[in-house]
Length: 457
Image (cartoon, rainbow, N blue to C red):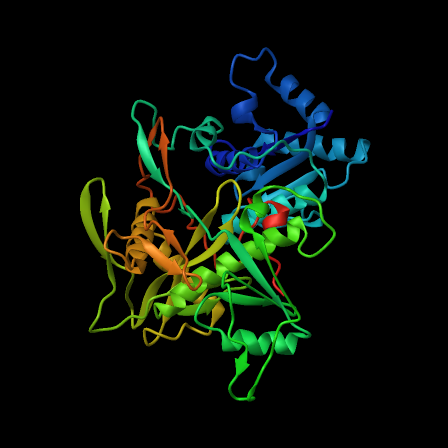
């Protein structure tokens, strides 16, 4: 049964990327192997085992392409053998080349006729495209496990990672847990979208949004009087629904269905945090399919967050000078209902000329991000996030409290969800080893269940 993905690559030059890609695919539930994990040593016939796996078990052969790839005789043998397997078994898109540097697309006969997936500019975007391709081709996978750092480590076979199994460590996630939300969501249905939009504009105190001709909010009542018109607009229907229903599947053909209700809750939670950020005078920058938020750079008021790390107090800025311009640490976010109720935070860097207005040139922005971000490692991104979150706090104990209705709040900790791991990690010293993941391009949605992806109107 063909149920496995095999990654071919030049060893040892491209082993690092191969292990990264393998771990990502394994965590998504795919059975994925490479020579580093399939062939562990001592096999009586190295090539016979590999040949059997390619011929009988492999459903997709991912070939990592770099400048060195086709200088390796083993890779050449794999490439030719897999072309034969593809042809003899009439397998559609059996070979998927993935390119990781500026190697020529015509480095080998037949390569330029393949649909090459590029990781050259951005690993995250390349991964997203591979996952979309595997999903489209209905490649078998098990239930993904995105919440286990230990499981991720078990999928990595590497000598460069800096993993120390003799020490435990605490890792910071990018999830802000939502401990509790209001018990009810209220729906106000109007005769048409124009009426709903007018009432929405009339009610800007608490978070709400319009879904067609329905206003969705945690508010128990709305102001129906339009002062500029001199009359009231009364909803044709008002009803409420318990938020717990979004976490217990139910059958209904009436609005909102189970999947509708989950999407509506996600959108309302998004509206709550977005309103809070804008009320804190953060600036908004539109990405390709979302928005990110950043603090203004003021010469007389430097934005420095204060936070505790390893029982020590730290204070760092979330804006600064970049040549004759300014850089700003920024976040985008998505509410998640699974595997736990939280906001998933993404890192960004925004550049402005005057400390306020983002550059209009997207290519210039992308290039500057890579220049600024190339020396930022895990700890720098972590510290930026912790500093940024501390600046959002509005309580004495450092929490973030958002008022979402007349008498209800959603309170977030300014410390993300923490994971304990039975190993520790040492940052690599080689500055050119890792390419920073740039979220300016399409953000990866692969870790979301289909019914949790926000569909923008």
